[in-house]
Length: 314
Ligand SMILES: [Zn+2]
Image 1 (cartoon, rainbow, N blue to C red):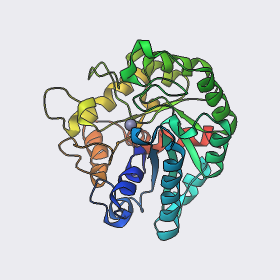
Image 2: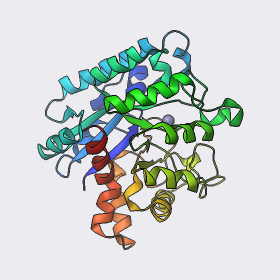
Image 3: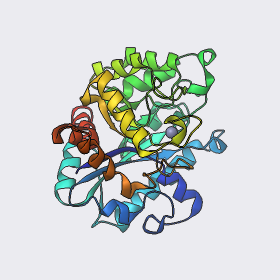
């Protein structure tokens, strides 16, 4: 089945470890991606800006990850191809390749400049997660709590410019104040590329029911995160917790708002039954066993994000 995964951290992992994509010992590698060639696949590679680069080196570090992404496109042209629009995702999948999208996780990469945002767009970036865990020039991350405040004036400008360019505004990691500011300002549907339900697992990184409804009402999509801490507390998380998240989000926001955002290569541990990217298709099997229609399962596994990309990216 066509799989669209809205968030993996393979770029930052491999830049740090010097391993290559075909030999990645983490969660995502070329062989695993190839398994989806027949059924089609789209993958957002997030350039995660680590806090050690925040002060002066965020742009520099981000450029190194974008370069790595483009090196992969050149090195593995039979398997991978860059996708900048929804239409390109469709064409590339039909050609039996994995459509690769480029995102940035952490607005620190902009270093306070809308010009950098526009240049990132020209380099292929189609998604920006406004913050990681800290307050930055744009907004506040979840651990900052209420005192962190919402979107800054610059953050508002960034959201408007992203709307104008046709980029996906990603609210994963935001604190609640920033989340609601984005909902108010964005003219386009928004995404939470890798977030779960806070009702099922009470963690500030997860979304309240009201937030789920707001994303869904705007036509946005939530990528369910496989990070064990955001799935279960005080016990081992399993693939069934991911299934429960999917079913709950569909119940609250409707099946159209649910997708996948594994966070592979960004998480230290994985749920039982979801050890790496090659296991993602198991979710489709379990969902079908639990009586969900093939159409609904297809939406969750990838069609919802595909639809959103066609609407927002063109
Ligand atoms: Zn993240």
